[in-house]
Structure formats: C-alpha cells, structure tokens
Length: 227
Ligand code: SF4
Image 1: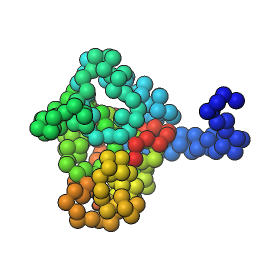
Image 2: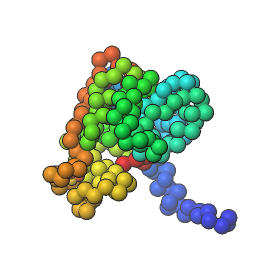
Image 3: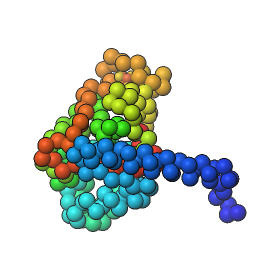
Image 4: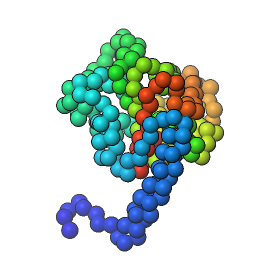
C-alpha cells in the first residue's frame, strides 16, 4: 500500500455507493421541483462535474461577482476562470482595502455573472438565504446579470421553515467558526436567536419562483459543499 493512502473496507465502499444512489434520487427530485418553479436546474454527481457545468455558463472574459461563499471557493474555480480571461470581483479579497469594500460589494452585484451558493434549497424548489449585510439577498432578488447557484446536497431541507432552522443551527455557527467570529451559536452549536451587535442573521430571502425576467441557474451537487 502506498504510504498515506487509506484503502476503504467493503462496508465503507458499500456505504459510499448507497449514498451516491440516494443523492442522485434526492437531487433529481429537487431539480424537478426547481424547474417547476421556473429555475434552470441540473444535477452534478461530483464537484468536478459541477465545475464543468459552471464553466459552460460563463463566457470567456466575463466579469464574475462572487459574494461570501465557502462553496464557490471550495470548488477552486478562481484560477480556472482567470485562465479563461475572467475578472473575479470579490469582497473577501485579502488585498482589498477596507475603504474599497462598499464599492466592491456594488461591483459584485452588477457583474456580468453572479456566482454564488444558496444557504438552503427546499424539496419543493425554493431557495432560502440569510444575510448579515444584505448584499447577497439583494443580488439574488434583483439584478440584470445571469445568476448561478451551486448547492451541495447537504443544503437540502424539507421546507422553508426547516431550511431556516438548518441555516441558523448549522450553517451560521460553522461559517462564524471559519472566520474566527465569536457568536453565541458558536459556543452552543445551535442558534439562540441572539441580540449581539455582530449577529449574522438580519435579512432573510425566499425565492419561491425564478424572479421575473432573470436568468437563474441552480446546480445541485451530489456531495457536501460549504456549510
Ligand atoms: S441569530 Fe445569532 S445565534 Fe442565531 S444563528 Fe444567527 S448569529 Fe447565531
């Protein structure tokens, strides 16, 4: 055995296959529901196939706005997009001066392509997002650009209520931990509906249907991505 390479035992291999089949069926159900709500939706079994789908939707040389999204960064798309002549606009850019942040947020939202994840997607094809600043939910509710959502299978919930619950109980504390931000949910491991000054949860958007006149694509990925 090559040093550092762990072989799977037969139960692990079987469980992986069980999970693959389950994700494929769940993904197909959600894609169908999203399409019924007017979104252009598709399923990608793996992160690599999701990347191919995203690239097919972004013309070379585009400006691509990327808000705070762990999923998009996990896909490692930035280098590939830059190699295709795309310009990435992101306010998480470590080189960005604090005084330029507001302008960058505006530039993200008005870019040619808006590339994001969604905090949640429901079994009946609704997209649920919660913001602290409100920049993402603003761009998701209205902009002139093409919007692409890439959503890991871990973000599927039964309905809007359980999606909001998952975002607050799971996604928000994980997100805060990743940024080293102290929030009450980080300490407890679940939401306590806090009143602290740096509370993350301030603006909730539910896209019940594809917004009128918007070209919105949703790619459901059969693997866990982001929070
Ligand atoms: S309301 Fe407060 S405690 Fe609850 S998830 Fe949001 S930031 Fe965390």
